[in-house]
Length: 110
Length: 117
Image (cartoon, rainbow over the protein chains, first blue to last red):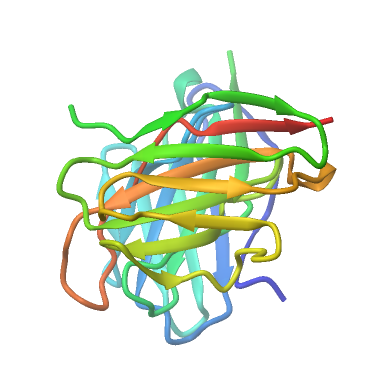
């Protein structure tokens, strides 16, 4: 079983749609959680951290369920510019070590 | 804005040849990472440095891969000999000092895209 699992997609949605991505992790001792965004043929960039209480940044909302070892990302009012791969990322407990999921691809169309 | 620098951006080589990639992290960042990303997959950690010391190289294929960060600043990743399966994007990332046990944001360089023929 992979340490971090995501649905690879692609998710094809129209502009303005709401879309949700899920991710599960296997190590119950994991301490920190993130979503990174990666544009085609570019490097990953931090989108947002994920806190136990949930957090929101504009149109993006991240949730963490430690009991189910499950992380989610909700994007509201999708824009064309949201088209990218979204990587679920977990710190399994090592200092500054990150484990990346394979990513979920999102394509927003007009 | 400070960036992680990598070179070359693209490298085409024949199998059995040696290749080397260079990374210069953001100034002052103590932790440096080398990742390999195969198309359609997420980045996979190859080696992690804390200053000049290796703290994790458990996924580095040590029979052909080597990495060094002699002065704790820039770093070189080498593959010798290259194999067809090494074709991938090689990403370097760095992060600053932070609280132990927590993850600070990792800043990635643009990567080196390696093609082995």
